[in-house]
Image (tube, rainbow, N blue to C red; front, side, top):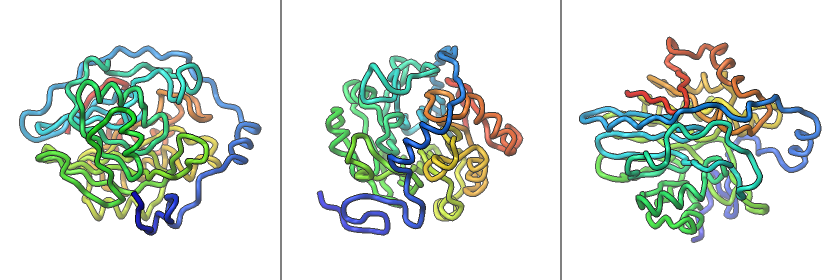
Length: 315
C-alpha cells in the first residue's frame, strides 16, 4: 500500500518533524570505541506474580512484566503492551541482549489477551516469538503504527489495525485507542531504517485514561500537546532507562529527569517507570535509572512510582 506524504513521511521513510535524526553507523562505532558500559548482574531474582482480576466496575489494573511489557485490565478488556517473553531481545536465540530479569508474569499465567499495543519494531518491543505464541493462543487484535502489517502477519497475527499519529479507533466496545507521536525511529534489518512508523498510545477504558509512551526522546512541545489534546492521563507508563551516553541516546531515549518532565507535561495523575532493569542495552548500571529518577523528584509523593517486576497497581 502506498501511503500519502505527510509532515512525518516523505513517501519512502518516516521521520520526526523538527527533531534531530537518530544516530547513524559511524556514531554507533564511536560509542562502542569510546565508552565502557557499567556492569550489570548476570541474573536478578524475580518471583513471578499472578495477574490481578479485572476490575468489576470502573478502573484499570496494571502489572509490569518487565521492559515495556504491561498487562492492563479493565472490565472491558485485557491489554498487553510491547510484549516480550523471550530470553533475548534479538533476531536470533544465541546472541544479542539477554534478560537479566525473567518476566514478572509467566506467559502461561496470562489471562486471555484481547488487545496488543505495539509501539515500534525494535526487538525489545516487537518480539516475534512472543507474538506468535499470542497469535496461536488468543488471536488478539493488534494495534500498531503504520507499516507493521506484513511483519505481524508473518507472526501469524490475523487481526491488525495500523494507525497514523493522532488517529483513533474503537478497538472493542468500551476500549478506544489513539496513536500519538513519539521521538524515536525504527529498524529490524539493514536497509529498513524508518520504513515503519513508531509512537505511543492513549487508551480509554474502564472510565480511565492510560498513556503508554513507548520509546521516545524528550520533546517539551510534543508532550505538552498530547496532554492538552487528549487530556491528563490517570496512568502513564514512561520509559526511564537506556539513556547513556547522552550524546548518542538523547534523540531517541529520555533520561529519568526528562521522564519526570513528561509526567508533569502531560499532567499525569499517576506514572510508573518502564524500560529499565530487564535488558542491558546501554551504558548505565541497572539501578542508575531508579536513583536518577529519585534525584529528579520521583517517588511515591511525586506521583511517579517505580514498580518491582511483577508488581501491580490499580487506578
